[in-house]
Length: 278
Image (spheres, rainbow, N blue to C red):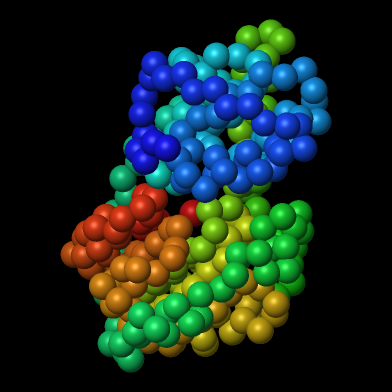
């Protein structure tokens, strides 16, 4: 019955039948909190069932949930427990890097309404895209040489399980999972294409909004991908209530600050603003 995140000590005991495991997992996920999850069992199939189903940043099996080791157990939650970039791990150092702040100015265009955005929001489950192992190959086939740098950078990322160092007898693995829906705002055609490629390569659905977006993404639209492109100038305020999980925008620092304030004012899970392309 708790409506907010509480840090212990708290003991709550609830019994359930073995055939109710899926209902238990669904009930936990519905709460929206996903910092850590712990499981104690000797049944291998039970472990994998929970690992595949639970939405949490860190999952501990047959060990305590306290004291993540930097380098072995990158730490960070998701959903209402979102903490931003994970602490530790192979991707941590990059988050301390600060690149040039130039950015691209937003071009004039048709002002896209909240209704247009909501009506075009793609379904992340379309065609099982998030679980396909051949996403990079499919994108390369459709692009035919376009966006080579973006697709090359995406191909260099290991989206499978990565083994991390740890004590003898303890397995520590890192997996990269799709976030869901990504709102790509460019603002120019080349940047929009790079954002879209990398979001799709990671298994996400993409709503791309910018002047000339359909033309910039013509190689990918209409190919059965979870992608929609709208030609127009996005208004951050209009997108405030849009159900997205990430916003990608490489505009000027002034424009980016406006976008950041709008998404920070949203209630619910943290929605990161990604300004760089790989």
